[in-house]
Length: 106
Image (cartoon, rainbow, N blue to C red; front, side):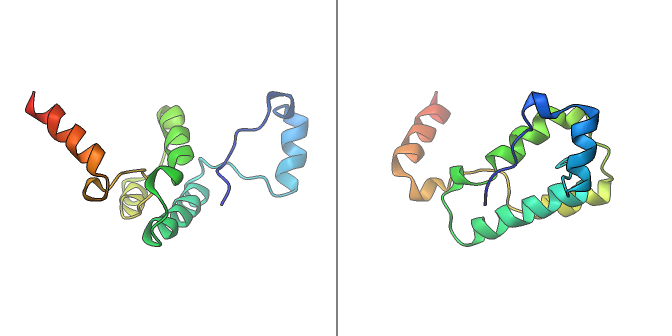
């Protein structure tokens, strides 16, 4: 699945956005759209897709727009059940595991 990408600035005029919305463009910051994208990433996670290849764009988008999010507590709870935040299974990455151990010792 392709990651959601921001529109190029020349396409962000009110007139162009109106036309694009009529064609089906949706804001990834609407909960139902973000949740749908996170579900797709969750499926990839459950299929074993490498961690750094999934969810990064969603996390970047969420962190950039966090101050404008108006989702309910229930929606946040729904989202918390999905695996969309990139993570690494340290037991499968010996070099990272050893680096983590060294950092926690100091």
